[in-house]
Length: 299
Image (cartoon, rainbow, N blue to C red; front, side, top):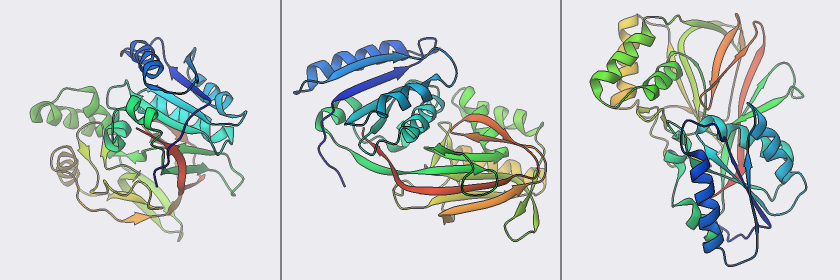
């Protein structure tokens, strides 16, 4: 449901050392909003100083309460930090948005409905789901949030490698082959206790990754209380390669959707959350849940 909103303050967070145009875009948005908004509002630019700083800036911006809009001028990884900061701030009135300034900008490309400045002026706020990730035992283990996907194994690695390359089927194929040659499958213990060997596992809230990899047809399901589970069981490498190329060209089609997915690691395991690489130790429970309508957003 869309509701018209005004804001007491707008905080625009960006990385001044970004290889993109983050500073210019942030300053441009600030100038645009001063001309568009018909009510008085404090519009502040907040440059980051180090990795993880956007989490702190976003949390501080919303923790005092009130109608606060936090805009991340960044790619998917920078926006992930801002979303987690807003969620930590505990302000139900807070709104979060992204102005794409990265390489892939998967979230903005998949969820954008109108130019950001116009959406802010119209107060066109809506709610979307997030993915809540817990690594550890019990519901008290710390949670982190993903706005787009959490990936283990081959598919996210290939997708990020594609994003670093150039457009074109031949260059995409070269990127896939380069990553594929170094890839090894991984093993998990399912909730039923059975061990399973996988090539890829992606829990996705959006249908696309890294510009070209289409994971599912779930383009209208950003607030349905579920996420798509894109799973490749271990298979001969030629079949894995065909599936990866299909994701990069045609897309994978319909995928099963769930509200939660749990497993336990057997060995240390790397994973990607909105494009940022992290890791979890061996013998650690991992639980990914949908956080329904957890994020108020616009744009």
